[in-house]
Length: 361
Ligand code: GDP
Image 1 (cartoon, protein in one colour):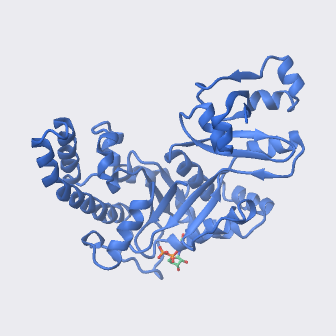
Image 2 (image 1 turned 30 degrees about the vertical axis):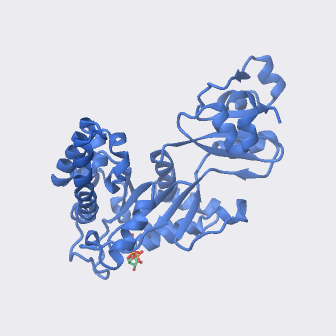
Image 3 (image 1 turned 90 degrees about the vertical axis):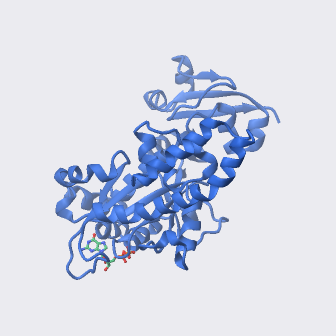
């Protein structure tokens, strides 16, 4: 499954946030046979539609989609030089599909900052510099062979150009992700290099309560994070939230003037940045959100439920979530109103599709 690697300087609140994430762990409940590593947290993707569907189809069982986070310990200045912890760090981060950088933005004189002062933009710079240096190393290591392949016409000149352009971007101190989002370079062209900074980034700012609603702070940071998504949360507050039952947690959120917990936001943004979306199934046995890649067709989606469903795919019976709810979940009513769509093998799945697959065995 796809994973998001959590990185950050020491003492920024990473463990606090990660522990809160793992206390939200849904794995044990729904996937009792899976093993879970101590540095892995599998958290539910918040989805308000699921309880609504469960009520309509009279089931107690809800299985949400999930987002997997991996705590990648130990980034420090010099990590890219690959000494000791550095090498392990780089190997771990290479395996992640996206990078979540936790950045300290809270002031607390009792908690030492590794660089001596709280400066989020500077922290991001420290971390990104290490990742950028690692990528430059990757490119420099690859270049002699690429030059040779170019002379032997084994690669296109356009590929070499893309690699050199990537090198220039990195040398200017920017990530490939940022440059790609600005439309300057096509990540797909660089796929073979597996560059770290070509992964999608999310920034999490661990802020004080008073900063949570402060837009001035966000604006100040724009240059260093744009155009990657940023989430503002208070890790200690999030940790407290996970210790409460649902009703109390909701009340605590409301008291703080928040609609949603930071961890829920993180799960949603993370899911999205991994290029995932869900479709839904709703029956007496369970209501479930299944995760697929954006752009997948109906047979591919069917294959997520069972490989036989993909091989023997005939058609998909699809009703949108809104139509399903408008008809109180009554199939006869949905059919009567012409809201049940029959979709074939080329159908591209849409978020919120409630589906039943028809297949040959
Ligand atoms: P890590 O080294 O990045 O994993 O950081 P920790 O999660 O261990 O946090 C370092 C210290 O900062 C701990 O004493 C935490 O209790 C404290 N801390 C974490 N988040 C916050 C926060 O939002 N506000 C304040 N004041 N302290 C925090």
